[in-house]
Length: 236
Image (cartoon, rainbow, N blue to C red; front, side, top):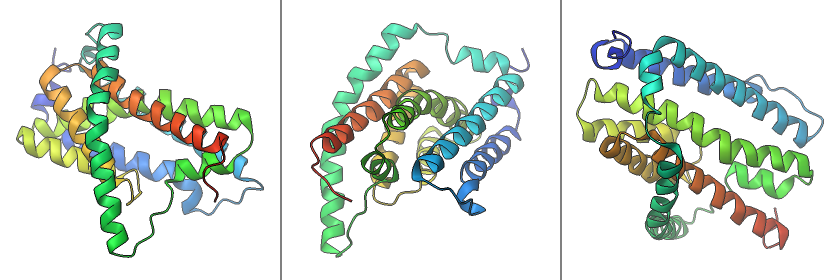
């Protein structure tokens, strides 16, 4: 029972979760930090993808071991219905994200700043190997929504909420979520998505809905990039 209430009672929990996320970020970017040389872009993508997966999996297993009862409680709701609700809620979010994106790009244009493609877009457009593209699609559409929702909404947001107000916790956890994606040109969209996900989690206490929203965002974004790639609509 103590473990089940640890997020509410353990003052050090917030700092532990923050440390784990910073540690995750460091390990996931280690290939660029130590300047590992790869013969091909495909080799770099596979190495980075596997490294990121193993690091996030390690964090997930550690959280499960440390907060077993709370971890299990995150998935107490029915999967199928909750997941589908999440996908439907994402379609409500699309118009807002689209208008915000157009506005931000207008600001960039006025400031004479040329937006560069997000890294995942660059990789999809550059890589020709079908197995590597499928590997990227799997990591981005399946693994990332599941792992990131556990870490950022299930634990980071909840850890902040155990010490601070709900509005501040939503804001700061979403800010960290967007900053760790490391791309200024999509920062606004990821930040808004993070706020929406944290708000939904706060109102429903249902992580499956958040995973469904996150899945829909990544899945349909990846499909759009594949469409651009297939019809050769953008050259890099």
